[in-house]
Amino acid sequence: MIVRIMGEGQVRLDDGHLAELNKLDDELLAELEGGDADGFRRTLGALLGAVRRLGTPLPDDSLEPSELILPSPDATLEEVREMLSDDGLIPG
Image 1 (tube, rainbow, N blue to C red):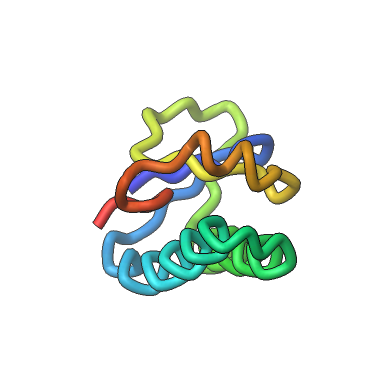
Image 2 (cartoon, rainbow, N blue to C red; image 1 turned 90 degrees about the vertical axis):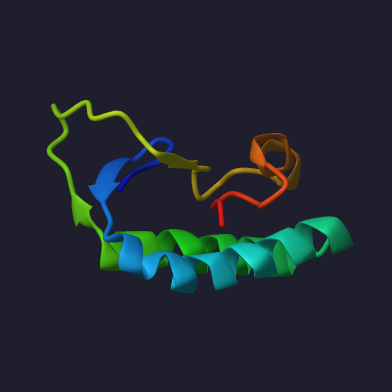
């Protein structure tokens, strides 16, 4: 799966890591719903960090279709809310 982090680029991520990312996504969704700005910032950082750690960066000149688009590390609660689906940022 190709994942884009807005403002950073794309990484190739094995589908086997989705369960770990979904746990963080569920936490992020709960923090958004509860208005927990500190928890949101911490969990967003952990989610993006996990994608960077588990994924393989694609070259900057590569333009693969992204199957998943994640917000930038400095995204606000409101910006992330606009990106959410019923499943959160990560489907499943």
